[in-house]
Length: 342
Ligand SMILES: Nc1ncnc2c1ncn2[C@@H]1O[C@H](COP(=O)(O)OP(=O)(O)OP(=O)(O)O)[C@@H](O)[C@H]1O
Image (cartoon, rainbow, N blue to C red; front, side):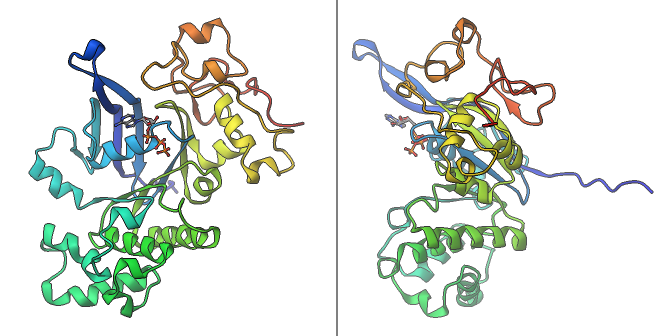
């Protein structure tokens, strides 16, 4: 008997992505580009979740915005559902955007609080006609509300009458209304209370099982990312320093930055094989406008040597390790100690 192989469908493939902002050039002449995202490669498979984690300011939102077209990249490619989003005409891009939705951190600012819930959910159907027939729209709003755990009577309420958790459910219903292949969630549960956060995370997971939607899930909260992700990419100063399955990243982190980050996460710190102490990083995160030479993490790394100032470590799988790591010293011997504690 031959084993069945199931080909995985890649919905999003980002290659060599550079994105950021422009500032006035030297002496006020021209514009200088500041790449906040400095050459990122990643893929998201259909029906799966890629979590992106990293400290505030590492470029997570810039990455999300570049992917959904809110911030044109400086270079690189973004392939979505087989189409090149960067090269696509505005018309084609608009068509593709139906399948690529985003849920932001704060629904009160990302959605119009004076609109009714029903109008917020149905808005995309005017931009993308043909998804739901006009006469079926009320019923579809009710179905979507039910899907995200709200009642039919919520349809006529205004957003400002709802709680933060309810608003975020509306934002998810609005994204789902277009039957997308991928939803980019940028700190989508960060503003919510702990119990509501857990409800929304469970809701997202249930919707994924039911509808097969993929997520690019961005958060600074390690435990949230761990809860929802199949794969995890760890970002530091605009680059990915480690990328692998959520289990490999959380159970056996290899990059010194990942180790430091995880050593402060309660779910990791408190387990028997966790680090003896928090790994405290010294120094400030350098500016994206003037990153260190070589390894971008070296100015805060407890392992840095001269080599790290000269050579940029490539993000690659190293012998004996299942995940990809961008560190000259990562290998299966666990040489990027201190980890684990014993
Ligand atoms: N238009 C801009 N002008 C000046 N600085 C910017 C601009 N856009 C981004 N930055 C800077 O780039 C860095 C990365 O920003 P970004 O919002 O992508 O990070 P982040 O990881 O999402 O952090 P946070 O969670 O705090 O938003 C930050 O230091 C931010 O101040």
